[in-house]
Image 1 (cartoon, rainbow, N blue to C red):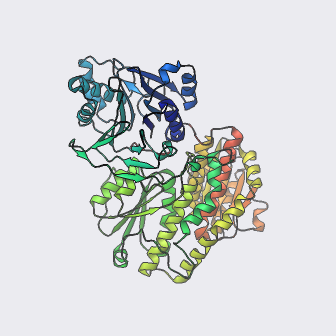
Image 2: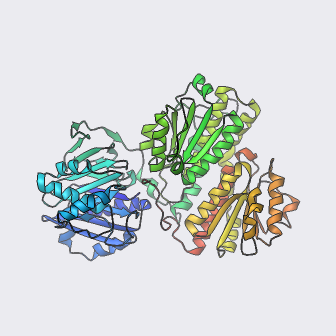
Image 3: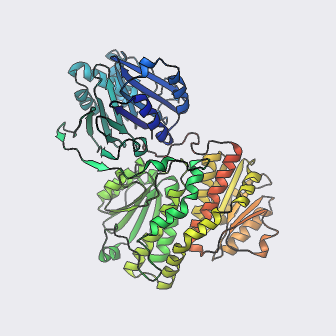
Length: 614
């Protein structure tokens, strides 16, 4: 989850690294640090909190100490040890010669630590990373070769890691290593880069090498050598990077989150291009590598995901079961990996992840793959670890999402699931054509309906201001919009820190109703359809307990006047497609509440964009 940037070349390393870290701060902002080598000395600077604190320290430093052409930097999401300066990366050996930055978790660090202490190592921090620093330093003392030292050390480590390592006696190289944590090498001319993610280096190069698990690389200004787990030199596989630097601009919006919410109509258009031509033509998904015969044999679908992606999967369950009749299980990856994996060759396993690097989901996918299930990955990153595990890949093409709170990637995941469910239904002949045609027709009109909501948000802004002082919130819905309630509650608690919870509306009276009074707003999502009257009845129950009621609906009903304190009307849309409109209202509500409260919308506390550790 932490962000890593390394640079070696002719530029001032500090400038490249700080800019790269600023683009990776969504991966963690508990602390930040940088190590630079100049005049055969390793200069280390660290600060708790956000990157701005590190920049302030560096602005006061002597120019000769930071005028280096090689360095490594880190922005941290804390796993071991408090987010303090002493626990911030880079870490170093006792003599300060060797420095290291690390993303991941070293699971056996407690086993290694006593032996290192016996050898005279003094530990200053509470982190697992410091064990790696001392271990590599001892290997270096024996080999006098930094590459060999890292190669020997990583063979003794268990868990996940992405490392960058430097040594003051070898200021012409950076050693990088990877296992179960993302790391890429940006290829330049007379310079090279290392990073956890593309945004850190896209301004400087469009070419990169993706390190695979158990590989170690030696990076110099004019060469990159990569070795496999047996220390054999292997050929470099250079790939073109898919993103443009302009994606990292706010384009006039106050926050990336607001920009990304407003990008959703275009995201939908980009997904639908070449996949749905009209309601009368079949959906085209060339990336799905299952034949009609193989699709017909699928008797079970498992959807595995975390967080927002899990909520998209829950919507997918409703769509698949309605259109195909195939039973669907949706499970949090973190739960899936710790029980018996019940899957076989007739199981379609769908893994969903914005980053494609979610550690729990990767582990779950590997377990399902061992059962010979067909693995279909839905991700925003076709260059990711999950994508490389896929039998079929559906890239959602949402573009870089900078804000930690996912918005446009959720929309893109929803659209991908709709398309996949329709594609499956059409190939197995499972559902009458009229419903499938209606959904396709609605998906084609979805961008314009999204723009209708986004072009006039004043009502939502007023509601946000009115309710921004409340400390608790309940979201309710039924059927296909129950996951919408979950996702709306998650967005609000993520960025405003208001205690928000989503419930199936019918469960309100089975416990949560005890919490209702005038201090507990209830937001209900109710669209005209089979569950409309039931949700309306649940709202009456909440109103009878003095709760403030907000309704989000596509239906103007006389019953609303004396029931809801506030109402948001979305464009007319069938219930089965309505999650794609309803969620935009809840995203905007969460955003404006957070903004009124003065919270850090794009970088909420304790969170990171990509959860790359279990």
